[in-house]
Length: 333
Image (cartoon, rainbow, N blue to C red; front, side, top):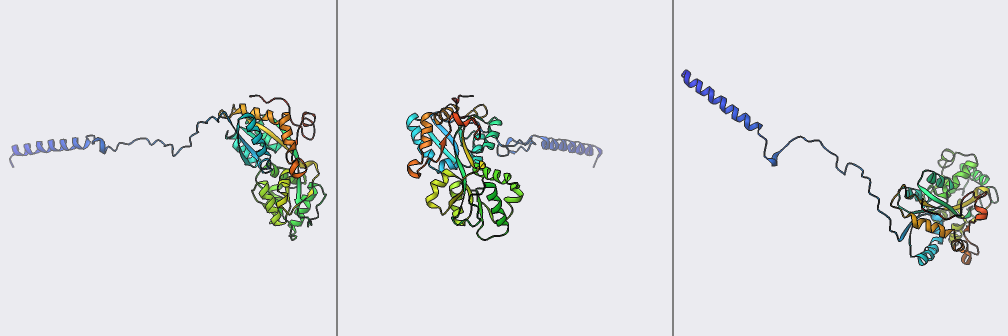
């Protein structure tokens, strides 16, 4: 090849190489782009905080303990109040612990519960306002009529101690059935164990098969206790309502630790802006009115021969053993 032809071949090679390189560096068509981007998490990867939906102005959402609902009291209250005011009552029945969780989320407007320690934490935490105690009855320890543990007429603390001792010794027929659901009744049970000088977690609830934690409402727990031939702590109202279905009898009905006080608490609108505080306050005021107290106090008399609940009034609620507020209109905070 002549020097001239070699020079021409070299120049052609340089041009072809330059064109090829330029083609490789050209941005691909839009449909084939593979540009690198920063990955941003989608809503599937993050937990979004939902925007609260305002509760209907003509509806009051109530979270309540099972003992008020199982007795049938709230069915009667619901009928009377709706007919009087036109406000619809929508009621969720749970143990006090779960009812309070519902209220903390702003998924109800009002609590009706019976666990003073849990109520105090709820109000002190800013979640509840305008607390008013409304009524009381008593817890009782019930069991088989033949009372195999021999606890009749002991103090609640002495009875629990005796049941535990016999249970740990594998005495036939000795069982204690607990709601085990952090309800007001379960909290009261734990307080009795504490008063009896036992650590509930390490010395009771996990101490053996004699102790049955069922995670049920009061009515179901009573039925299961009867089936087991065991003992349980129950509120008086639910026991009377279920008495015809049970082979259990009251064995201990007295003792300072058996007081069972019920309260109404409005959910704080400053924390949960969607709640219907106006109707919650109106309902609290009705419960503590003459009409509301009469409905509460008379409930059960025709069927059971006695009222299942005693309404609280100003002359007794502010002093021991109640130490609560039951007077004064509840007004929006």
